Image (cartoon, rainbow, N blue to C red):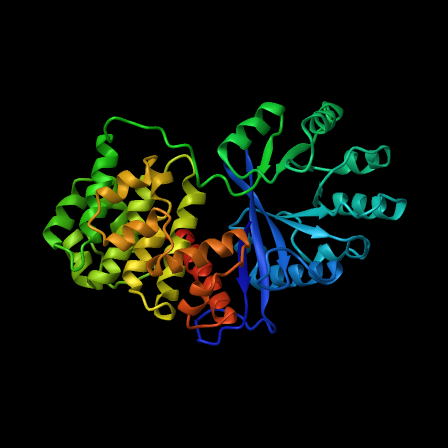
Length: 421
């Protein structure tokens, strides 16, 4: 589960609205058979604890409020936003203040399908909203809602194989997408796919199966050379320039980014050398890494690209509060998904990079001070706030400020990827 958190910004970070009390909103991706993200379920959280506690009606209202303030397209990365609704908020038509084109009304399993609920659902369908049934259990009284539903979600881990098959068999011929929830790895995805599910919810897509190879393909080898050159501090500009020029796609991407509204340069930049002279080594390294990520993206392109850039920006902004280098933290965040981008083991990737031993260890999963920023980023993504005493001592800011930093990292990534160039 990917935690998207919003709060007031005590540090004065630009562009963040004042949302009053600290608010927490988790995002969890929903994917199709090709492992493309089609939307996110928006999950309200009342605090740092892992899981929801509180009033369900209030949680729905606050989630809708967050979507209104920040924009549902922004929060869902311009995809569908699945939002949980209780009986009360469903009947009151609370959802109608949100755009039908991007909202899926997710009806909680606690909502009984009485005549009033069915009438409210039919009204929403007539207005163009999609409906989803959460934690679905096969019962005779669910027939009217099944006929209106666009998505039916089944808890893959809680429900036994035979019960899942009964549901899928009962839905044959019904025009509805069956979503397997709580899919956390490639093996579970393949099993759910073989059972007949068409959509999948979980956080497995950034941990693909790595296929062992005897040698690294030339295109990936050049990517590693560029990463290696950019990882040196200070870097050898001649080495960086030659490495980037050896990859036309990368060079093109870099120059597009430099000439984008992100930097608002007065004159067109038409060479790698001119780009460096204009924006300086630190920003050049950042843009070159973005260009490299775009050029290297594979089957999980957009999802992984957003995740890697957002992690990079989050780690960079958090760096002063954990006593680490912002530029190194940015690199760690970006490289944290490199194994998925390049379809190579992380061990192979770090062996080719001139990184500190502690940085390599952080990327390989070791808990050390350098890894703290990445660890915090991953906690936002999984909703796991079981801090260790060492982690708590290593962070010199509060939860509210980290919430603002996270919101800013999402905003920055969204602008970077979607701004015209």
